[in-house]
Image (cartoon, rainbow, N blue to C red; front, side):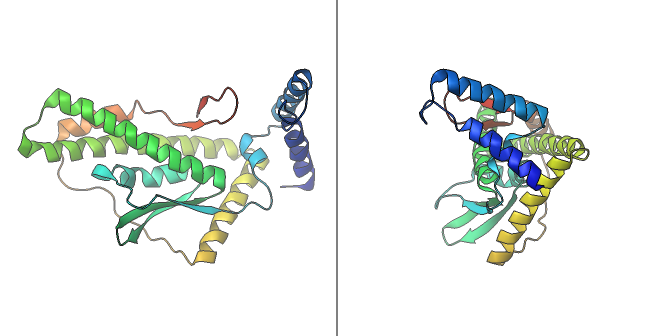
Amino acid sequence: MTTEREGLLKKVRALLAKTMESGCTEGEALAALDRAQAMMAAYAITEDELTLTKEEKAVLRREPPGAEDLHRIKWYLLSAVSRFCNCEGWREGRRDGKALVFCGLPSDADFATWLLDTLTRFVQAELVEHLCDVVPSKGERREVIRSFVIGCTDRISERLVELCEQRKAAAASNTNARALVVVKDQAIKAKMDELGIRLCMSSGTCGARADSSYRAGHNAGGRASFGRPVSGRNATLRLR
């Protein structure tokens, strides 16, 4: 990013820092916020740009020891969530099991961790409803669960990839957006090179499936939403 752009970002950050908590009156804080939002709109400044500094480095976010991945839901979603959140993701071995890892800038890695957990809970909740509807026999239950989970995670992954492609197309004509992507990619590569991490391709899901449960899961995956938790006063869930 150019020095001129960095100076502009610095001004917006300074305006956003003028809050009542920092000693401003309510009127001063609101006026600063209005001007910051006006500048963001006029210069097409994104929140990602504001949170990124030249010195910021990529980090690793690992699951805590003993974390479970029931029915491999997280594993099936890992690749698409990583891509959507501008991270690299993989599974590393541990004595007490496999742990999922994200590498990215802190805000992206935190979002990826949160989104993966949120989507996993969504799939599990939808699976409960499906099992209540079909009431499979003990002998059928394992395949019904597997097929539903694969269908649901397949559809969620498809939608995440579609959103990534839309974002990529929009960024193609935006110099600042392209520069931001380059900065993030370089930070991730630097971190992985530092740690000597090399990723290899893994195979996807395969094998026989219960078609009706797969279709039900696929339909359920179409109802998932992808948001980013926004911290602070009057926090909301921003949908993408």
